[in-house]
Image (cartoon, rainbow, N blue to C red):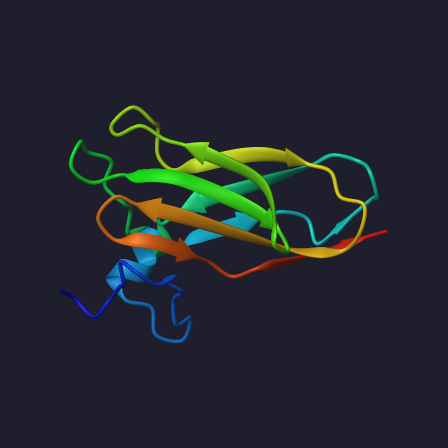
Length: 124
């Protein structure tokens, strides 16, 4: 087994030394840094694609699900089907009452669970 990933532990990239596995598996969150309390805003999650290294989407190798958390609380978990999704970009509308950290995780059917950098959100 490769030492680039673990099937039994949460995979988190070393941002100072990204390898190919990191670049194609890490979920990246795009969201505003400041939002208004109780007003919806859009969160975009892209899996992989760092430096153009895309994750495959085939019957034998695909992203099975993507989850978004506010702190430790699950906001959304989206299941994806092999070959049928158009890249790995999800858009989710979120409403927060207080400042928190958003975290995204994804599960690759061959390489386990991956988590990217948390995105700090200040609620005003």
